[in-house]
Image 1 (tube, one colour):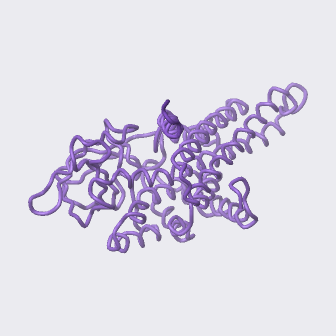
Image 2 (cartoon, one colour; image 1 turned 90 degrees about the vertical axis):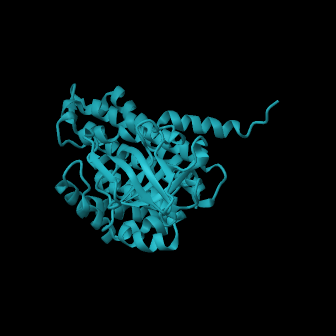
Image 3 (cartoon, helix red, strand yellow; image 1 turned 180 degrees about the horizontal axis):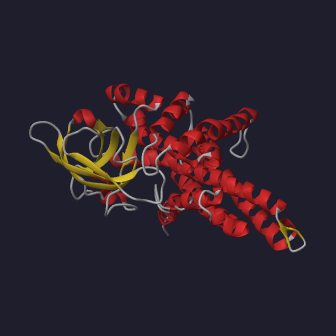
Length: 375
């Protein structure tokens, strides 16, 4: 298989996922309470075997899942992605005891995970973390500080938390910890965000952690974070492509059926060319996402650059496509409950989280110049 086409089994899988999203997941999503974890939806993702598949297949399969779910039910897509993002560090870098304790619940959907990296003053500059892990003379460390903009907080059952264990050492002094939600001193509060899922802050007041809670190695947590993001950044692009495709298909149907100026809207050259541009950019983004995912699965050396390119192109493309779709639909697209009103709210955040577009450009430039020999 090349990076630029899907085989018949993958195409059928994508269609099956769309069917599940529309028939089984969307009804549960509609019953959820905005701003809170929809546990019934997460359990259904587990029942369908999709959460288990997060850990049993590769990056391309992850992208197919996220793109297909996003097309019909963005809430299901996001619930799936957050389980993967929060638990992947445990799966890839955790101890046997950590995996045995937490991953069965993640796979079944009965345990909700969260990825806690961002802080009030350390968002795009992830190496500037200030949540401190101070040595505890008794055993381990004590975490003190704050995390914010954390998806699934404060309702998750455990958090993958990144804290500074060695002051003044930048990315080299960060350690990843598995912190159960019931640890003494750990508090949280929700944030009122545009997003329909839970996002909140976490407060750490001398929260105890031990060597048994370390994910990976002490002072090597930044590698845990970056390896996770290298996997999930292309799949953020897949999420964006799914939304762009949904907006494009809605626009095709609308412009083909809408009467305007003595004909159909599609008969206006300005409209048909706009739709063609939307389709062109969506397909280009999809191909770049698939290529980045295939590179990750093959262990290619240029994964950071490809992952950054895929996320950047796909999220910026989705913003363009959804905005154009709203323009071509007119005022009806802004009515609460319309598909495009929903997508217009959903499409904005992916250009910021897991590395803003500006950060992706920085990664791409750094990787490109790393191959150039100084004169």
